[in-house]
Image (tube, rainbow, N blue to C red; front, side):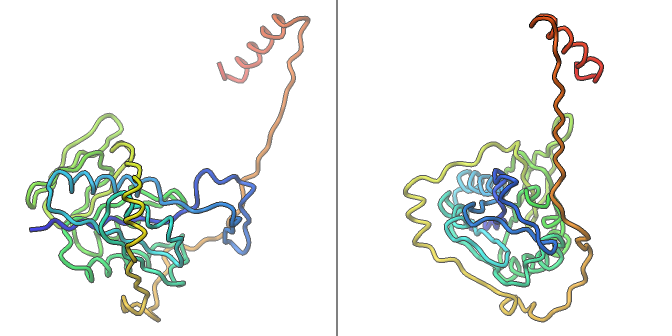
Length: 265
């Protein structure tokens, strides 16, 4: 029986984007078109975890599932280039509210049910844009599936799933059965780079697109659990103090004393 893995992946702002490229208007962030989005880094590791499982068990299929108001296809197809088999995009303007994941959680969970015969859902531990880490937990709650978080290793044998969970002082091993939801941490290791064959193959795969009508969510009122009150760029304050001395050695001594006063050393 084929093991079916769904990996959730989010398109996010590139963490390397400079602060000067951000413009905040009406509690929304606008970014210069010169800077392309990326796949959330933890989600790339979730794809890597799924690929390792597929290599270990042999008979497995990986479907990547993403939710958002719009997508850059060359970006969101990266998991396909890495080796995933299918891509389903939940694309609708109603998914624009990123701060409250209520509708996104429901949409992803309904999509997983719609896909059918899903054995594992693997997600990144959190997204790099809002760092809420709520979506995978919400999916597990909505589906009433067991949840294992912050995994560094996942082994699947039949219907048994063994997960090594990262702890502050080491790790623990937990076991559950399929179907289950697992979140992956960066301790899993670096995701693989797509090769040319994978990139060319990904170009030929057309994603399946579902909107709120397909998911029977159109016009549905969703209780907002979180509201964005304000959004501002952090104030950057730079203070410079010049330490002078009779010569370089004297300046060095005075600098060391000043750093000690500030408890830097």
